[in-house]
Every structure is written in C-alpha cells, then in structure tokens.
Length: 498
Image 1 (tube, rainbow, N blue to C red):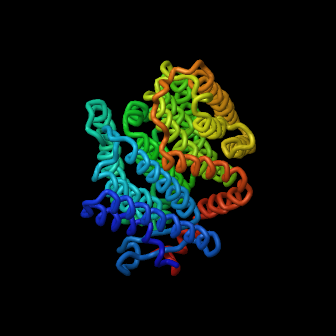
Image 2 (cartoon, helix red, strand yellow):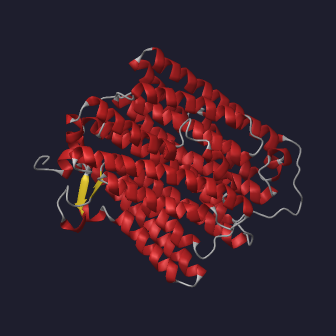
Image 3 (tube, rainbow, N blue to C red):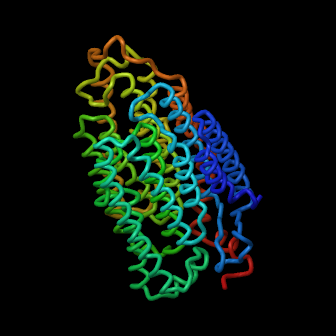
C-alpha cells in the first residue's frame, strides 16, 4: 500500500504535463477528469488503510530519512486528501460545464486544465509532506498555479486584485522560508518526525520564537485576523470555479499546516492563549464584515474568514476533543464553502450579477438554485441536524470542558458568529430569493453539468451529517494520534529517531 502514497501528487503532475501538450479541449477535459477521479479513488484507499494500519510512509528515491524526502499518509492527511479530491473533481466538472455554456472571459482557456492539476498536486503534496521544506514546496506549487487561475481572463479588475493576492502570498512564503531556515539552523534537520524530538531540547524562548514565525506564515495563508484583509478583495473577482476551489482548499492548507506543526512540533501549548484570541477575533471581525456586504461573493468571502476561527479555536484548546472538532469542522467547511461559491456562480449566470441590490425572485424563477443555496447556507449557519451544527457543538463542548474565562469567551464569540451567519444567510434569502423578481425572461438556462456538480457537493455536505458518527470516530482517532505523536514518529523512524 505504501506504493500508493505518492500517486495523489504524481498523477496530477503527469496529467498536467499531458494536458499541456494536447491541443484539443475535449482531450484536456477527459484527461483532467480521469486523473482527478483516480486521485479520489487512491485517496479513499489510503484513508481506509491509514485508519486500519496506521501511517503509511514512502521514502522518495529509496533514501532513508532524514537525508531523503518522505511522504506520510496518516489519518489526518488521508482525510484531507479524500475530501479535497472530491471537491476538486466536482469543481472541475463545474468548470467544464461553464466552459461549454459561457464564451466570455470566464471561460476556461487552454492553460486552465494543466494549471488546475498543478494546483491539485500542490495541495496533495502539502498534506503528505513529511518535512518542512517539502511542505514549503507544496505551498509554492499551489500558489504558483493560483497566481495564474486568479487572473484567468486578464480583465483589469482581476489583474489588480490578483496583484494584491500575489504580493501577500509571496510575503507569506518569504516568512515561511525564513522560518524553515531558522529551524534548520537550530536543529540541523527539517524532517517533521525528527524535529518532534529535537525541538524539545531547545531553550523554551527559542522554541517559542520559531513557533510564532511559522504561525505567522501559516496565519497569512489561512487568512486569520489580522492577516486576512487580502482575501475578501481577491477572491470575488476570479471565475466562479476558481473562487470556489480557493475558498474550499487554499485556506485549509494553511489550517492543516497549523494543526500539523502545533501538535507534532510544539505540543507544549505556549501559544494557545494567543491562538484563542486570534480565533475569537477572526470569528467576530469576519462575520461583521459579511453582514455589511451587498455583494454575495464578498459576503461569502467574509464568512470564509470568519469560520476559520472555529478551526483555530479547536487547535488552541490543546485537547483531543478540541482537535477532533477542529478536524471535523475543516472537512465540513471545505464542502460547504465550496458549494456556496458554486451556487453564487449559478446565480451570476442566471441573473447576470451577484449584487444583492439587483437580485430578486430566484425562489420562484429557479427553485433549484433556491434549494442549492438554502441547504449549505443553513449548514454554514449551524442549524441542526447539519454537520455545521455538529462541528460547532463538538467545539463548544470541548471549550466548556477546558473551562476558564478565555475559552468561554471564545465559545460565546462562536455562538454570536453562528447567529450572525444565520442573519447574513437569511438576508440573502429574503433579498435574492423572496423579493419580487427582477430577472429578464430571456435569462440563460443553467448547464446540467454545473448544476449536477453543485448537487453532488450539496449531497456530500449532507452525507457528513448522516455519517457523522463514523466520521467523528475517524477524526477522534486522528486527533488522538496527533497528540500522542508516537504513531507518526515510529512510522517514519521504525528503529528510533537518529
């Protein structure tokens, strides 16, 4: 089974190379769909094997660690791989449907498919990376591809907002690379399993400085307050499928990096108070920004920022229950946020705008869009029995069990954020769906492939609720393994850390 571990990275890269040389759009689409379907299948197999047998490790080129690069598929990485593969496949199908119906600047061009597959490879490489530098490489792969995708079409607005996105992420990459260099200078290694032992021997203040530097880099990429101002200005201008996959995955790679490093490298919890404050402020500032918006895409961008705070809160609790809730909430948020941006794309295609002041009557004119918006919107707001409610309930219970003024304050902030999310979703519903119709009779119909892929993601979001028990069991085991650290370290160094 270890031979399967590199495939989620290798297959998209090979697919990207193949689609780059193929001159036929239909062939490009076929290769992309086959590659991402295979990636989803391999990821699901890795999840089953990691849950049954523990972390799977492959040594690239046969070189033993720490001299060689290792890829590690533990339960957390396999969970993230599986959900992200499902999301990238659905978004790809949506983009194909959009390209078949839309001949404007939003249409996927010949470079879309190879760039999209490189983005996928960067995401999967980040999840599987067994050392800090390979994690940096994964970030750079996905970011380089995202620079192309966010400016797809070359309009003035996209170039301008894309420039902000590029500058901010280059700055974050410089901070990350500097942190990697300092970690190597202090410990002589970048292998995560080996760092788990060596960092413990460093002076506490030096260890805290390294921790904060990595948190700064990952915080920018995860879009936590006060490092998130770039996101609401950058995401809404991109094509709908690009915005959707960015919202679902790119910030979650930053959250994943925080989870991995905080549990494996810095388990002493010295930054927990800071993370709790950041989590609470991210929730409140993000949702207040959402409430003030009149454009649906910008509103969703602010809710994206806001709900990152729930995940950071789970990490900051430094308990198995808190991390279990955080991992479950990551999985839920990947699906629901991607779905909402895809629905926004359908609304834009049907109505010609996502400006709430220009919308109305969608529930009467296109009831299918109404259903596709209502379900993930209630899911995001945390209405029972959707997984958004289950994830928040798990996090609130974990916070209550820890106790203390700061955890209870963040729990209260989370409750307020959930209510404000419900208000924002209800406001969109009342204006865009219930208000008197404002759409022209000759508005274009919705392509079946775009609708079908959106329905698939809505179904996936509901499935997380129906299968919440088994999924919580897997996330609980993953959280327990992360805090014990031993399964990960022994998988990489079965004979002991050198």
